[in-house]
Length: 157
Image (cartoon, rainbow, N blue to C red; front, side, top):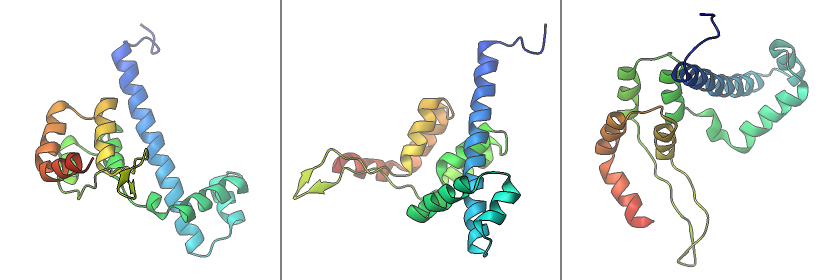
């Protein structure tokens, strides 16, 4: 059997791991560019260190300036770290069980619900579950821990 012969399940697991690493690397890139810029490095110098175009550096800086929250850690990153093999399941669950989750809301205008949705950090958990990154047991533990917040979010929907 050649090294390219794998089962579909093995291929799916490899794809999930690489996708998680890509998301983590993209977050790390965004953060390091923002830190370098804040430390006084010019875009040209950052570009040379990363071997990317100045347009890429500019886009990353604009992205972090327009939405500084993208520089903060997220539950999705913690889950991706486990998927990428960087942390254990126990470490992931310890961090997620200690997370202060926010829950998505539907904004209201003049007391009427709009057709918009403002996501919360709990959406990362749901997305990860549907991607197959969390088991039913892991989701159940997180739901039990966040029962009150989930109930409040359901009532306000």
